[in-house]
Length: 154
Image (cartoon, one colour):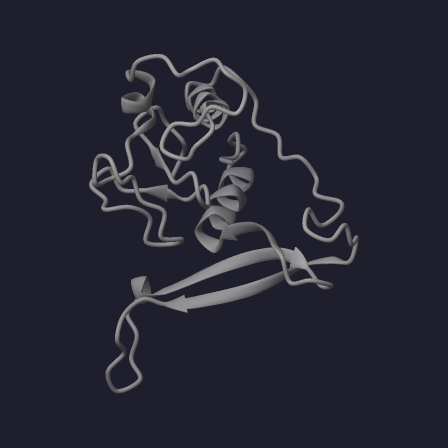
C-alpha cells in the first residue's frame, strides 16, 4: 500500500494499519485516549502540539507525526538514516534476521495466508537490541514499485 494522508501508521513499529483498529496487532502499541490509532489526516486536524522540546502526544513525538504527515502528502522525500552502531551498547556488529509470527491457531497443521507474518529485524549481535523492524509486506511493496518504475513506499 502507498502511504496517503488517510493512512494509519503505528508509532511503535511504523506498520500501516487499517483505519478501523484497536491498536497495532504487530507491536501492541495502542492509543489509550481514543481506543484506536488515528489516521494521519485525523492527527493533522488535532489542536497544535506543544512547542517545548521533548513534548509528546500520547507517547509520540510531534516531529514523528509531522514527518509522517508530510511524507504522506508528498511534500518531503523519504530517506532512511543508516544505522551504523547499536544505540544500547555502541557495538557495530549489526545484522538483519528474519522473524515469523503465526497469528492464527492452526488446526491440522494448515495455515491461512494471512495467519503468518514475516518480518525483517535489524539488531545488535552483541546485546540483542532490536534497532529496526520491516515487514515482508513492505519489502514486497517496495520491490513491486521498483519493478514498475514507481516511487517506492517507505
